[in-house]
Image 1: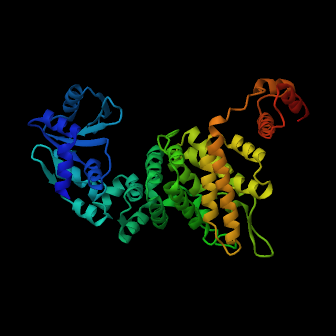
Image 2: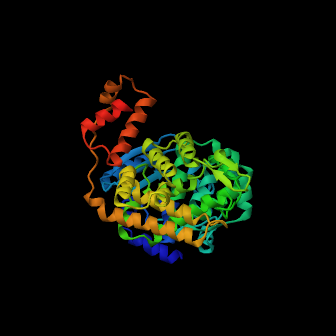
Length: 466
């Protein structure tokens, strides 16, 4: 493996520019770039350690050489970033901790992230069997103390599993469980980033299963303590936590078989710096968080969760705000939870006339594809004894028909006109900004979706009578 990685390093234009510039200065590539080369992944964020020369001076000089932007990330710990002109590639430059390469490497999180490459001597430095872990497809930490010193690394273990699919030893899961409460120490923004990286991976399901097993899941998202209390029932063959994880699996499966148009949509980075797919997987995982609060059992033994989608949508907002998600991210996830059974319901209760389909499309806006996928994934993740093959087949067929219709008409759609402003509505009703105003605006939109109102005069009469 090391010879293949050496060839990749020697053929990387940016790395060779750094090597040529460094001349007699000892410079080492370290961490993610080596790991990513081993995994055959693209890498745009290169970490380098500069030995026996001030990292700040080296970074400033290299920035001039590469015509890059110099950013002092952390003056206290002497970490400096160069942003290249393409705005895609980054170089993080630092000196070794305590001027000791060994101490620097031994304080890293995972063994596979502690491999260094000496650019001057063209040789690897692998003090902690990182290559062995990469070959064996295992995730191992360097030391338990490193997790205690930076508890975010507890979550990073599972983030890297989501990205690589590598196995985590049961003993490591026990160590995480022992220190799980420490995850409340890092800044919420850092937890947010690692969580979204976890949902960006191809092996999110595997990571979620172990995140739950370690106890870390309920530390980060305490609502899942309640989710885990809901057992299987006649409509769900899995307990609710299993159903939530299975929904993520089904979302990933749909992405794998999706056509180019759907994949391009889900690959878009519209908010939060991560793809729609990553956000959809998180929404799919959280789609039933309202069920415990709505849980009743009838005399017949049937479990009911009436309006759980509305309750869950409201519950998710403070949870996501606490984890520093942006307004747009929260709006998206909230909408996916609120409407996750909506398309299935209209198939059963109304059928799929063109008017019904258009009303649905108007309501969901740019989220049609996402919403249909989460609805199909939810359906395929609930296969209790009361759910026949015919029920599943009819539901999936209807949802696929709805998706097909949307893809056929979406380029011809025009946004509905705003018939009345909030100011105009307040004047008509003689009210101030309030919950009532929001309800009127929503009701007016609904009437427009249905095609019942098309002019300003009709809208004015509607508001007057509301």
